[in-house]
Length: 434
Image 1 (cartoon, one colour):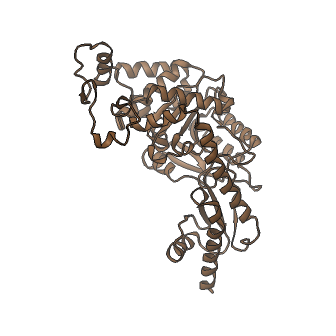
Image 2: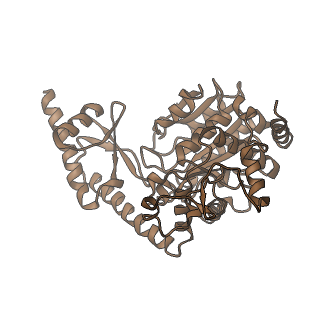
Image 3: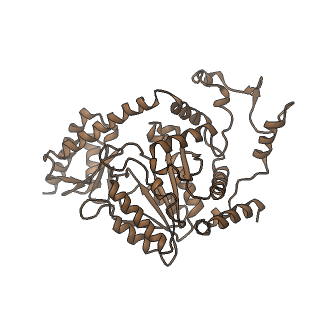
């Protein structure tokens, strides 16, 4: 075994043997090489004052070589902030800026020991890293029945984990913390569980309130006290888009330092928070009272990145950093937030009008990009294809009854027409079935 792997594993096992037990086989084997091209290049960058013939970039007159056809569209940026490789763990200034932002927006994380965020190639990459580090074949990965389908690919298909779903809503249309608790406690014999908490939820647009949040934390704590090692992953893809009286921060902060058997992992990004979907800039952050353990996890995370994508795109990181540093960032973000909130409010107003009650109910929503109709009389897939073919309207069918509608991409003044046509589509199918 590589000596560095031995050192990282020894540190994690010494600092918290429960976290060491959470690591997958790959997680225990991975490391970030300190001897090799990157480390030698870094040393040369600091010391090679005559010629630096190490890393594989091309220079011209001391600056990165570039094509004018590209730089003409980026002339506001220094070539050094665009063309060279970013470090595998991400641009240092961006990592600090994101950490500062995270602590301001998540007061419950303040005063806790958290790692420096590591830059990922957006949210899916962050979740994939979590899967690689912690999920082995047969491990339980727990998340609600209303979920993002990529969890199955990341944890089930890629890593062979067992997917365990529980009902998102209870009989009172609140978050089903009791079902979560039961799903976690059912893993007592195996002693390990990975729990994914995605709020605002995709596809329903639901975020728990403060009381529900405390119930979720208590459910995980009960599992830890029963001897279960829990990797608690907060998928905060739609963070900050909270439109009503729900939690307005991630559960990551409440879970931090709560129990030695709980390892909180925050996966988030600029994708939705800064409305830069194609930039592919995300982050992964860990929490533990042990700084050496966090440093070891950062090294293993960097090793996964080095072994897969090597490093994320430098231009995107520079663009996001500049946005975070702009004095107008918050006012511009709030402007877009209010547009999104108006669309969510208009959607709820239309659905509560009573006009569509014969065709559907809807699952509670208060945040994010989406909401889900629960159809009463027609099949969701049949309606989806009918709407697409006859009305040119795209929606997402989930199971037999659920139809996801993204109000995020519809102007507020067009929402009434959208739901009128969906309703007409239901009517068409009902009449055809007679």
